[in-house]
Every structure is written in C-alpha cells, then in structure tokens.
Amino acid sequence: MKRAGLLLLAVVPLVATAACLAGGAPDRSDARNGAGNGTGNGVREPGLAAPAKKDLAQKLVSSAENSTLDWRGQYGYVEDIDDGRGYTAGLIGFCTGTHDLLTLVERYTKDHPDNGLARYLPALREVDGSASHKGLDPGFTKAWKAEASKPAFRAAQDSIRDRGYFDPAVRRAERDGLGALGQFIYYDAMVMHGPGTGPRSFHGLRAAAMKKADPPSRGGGEKAYLGAFLDVRRAAMKREEAHRDTSRVDTAQRKFLDEGNLALDAPLTWRVYGETYRVP
Image (cartoon, rainbow, N blue to C red; front, side, top):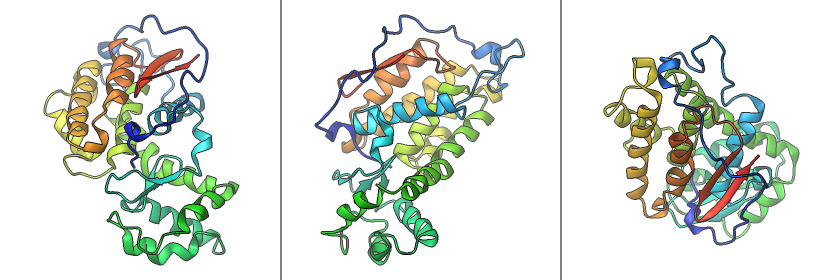
C-alpha cells in the first residue's frame, strides 16, 4: 500500500480490445436482500475469489497502480513515490514504511535464507514506520528487482497479497452481503489505505460509510451502501496529496456501480488518470 497513480508518467492505454460497455445490469440490491452473492432466484453469482474474477480484480488494481493491465509484470516494481511511506514495491505496492514489505521479506527469508534481500532485514526493521531509506541505499532496489525474477519470491508476494489484503477484503464484503463489485471496492480500498482502523484506513472508512447507509446484511440496499462507501473513500483520498486524483473511484468503481454491474461482469471499460482500459 500504496503508490499514487497520478505520479506515474509512463502509461500504456487501451490494453485490450472490446466494445465499450454500453449499459449495466439492473440493480439487484433488493433481490439479494443481504444474502451475499445471491440473485434472488437461488442462483449464486461468482464472487471475487473465483479465478476469472480474481484475475480481473488484479487487472483493475494494476490499471490504477501501474497504468497497465499486466499485473504479473509488476513483481519487480520498486520506487519511492514521495508519499511518506518509503519505498513502494511489488505486486500491490508493499511499502518499507508500512510493515507489509518487512513482513514479506521476513517470511520469504524464513523459507529462503540465502535470498538477496535477507541482508537488508536489519535496515528494513529500522525504517519500518518511516519514509527513511537508511541502510537500504544504494543496493536495495537492485536486489528487489533481481529477487523478483525468482518464482519463489513472486509466490511469496502472492501469498502476502492474499493473506493481508485480498482474502480479508472478500470475507468482510461477503459478511456485509456484497457481491463481486463490492468485494472489489473493499479490496482496492484495503490495498490503498491499509487494513487498519484509523479514519483513513479500510475499517475506519467502512465504519464511516455505515453511519451513512446500511449494508445489505443489515437490510440496506447494495447500491446505496456502496455509494456511501465510495463517497467516504473519495473524501479520504482528497485529504492526501499523493492520492488526490480519485479517478480510480470516479471513472472506474463508481462507473460500474452506476451501471448496476454489481456482479462485476465483463466486458468492462473504465478510465484511470486519463487513460482508458478495456477487458472483453
């Protein structure tokens, strides 16, 4: 968590070819009536953990994080984007200042003690919670990129992503009675803001949204609740200089919500930071 998309200068637009999504599915909020992924007729829609949906979720996040749908090409990403979180690196932007990167390297080193990042563990512990590079420069970024070429390190990144962000977000959304779109909205928020309880962290945002609207699990409408959650998240992003471009909410997630695409079904067309992306 989290790199600011507005700071990415090199972008690759229109990474797939498909017609623009002309309209959305009807609002199934009342039909679902808090029953998770139901459609009202006993049939369950595939949630975000279904393989195709999970791949789509990674593409959506990557469009905002790296300006590409090629999320598998981001394991070796590493830079300081000047957001106060030190180095941002890897698949979803693990940060040297937010503990998740340290957790990743510690767990990876436990299984692979001779890896090229192990020697940076003392420095990573020292800078955890700060923007400092002390003990990391000049070799850390090169070591990260080299390690990212190894399948074991890529698998380790996948594991931390799932254990720390994807799985908790999906579980929480399912308990709130949300379908695949709501599950993705939670996941993207948890990736950017972190899973904490502060006012600008995921659980703080959720608590604020629930003061404005009830989720389906409490009898509320799904579209109304997700709209309230996106309102709260957008306001939080506007308070952070590095995240003031809210297009990942405004012209992606909000667009899908306005179209009534609560199942997050393809084809999808969205815009982030002025670039258009399509998934057929």
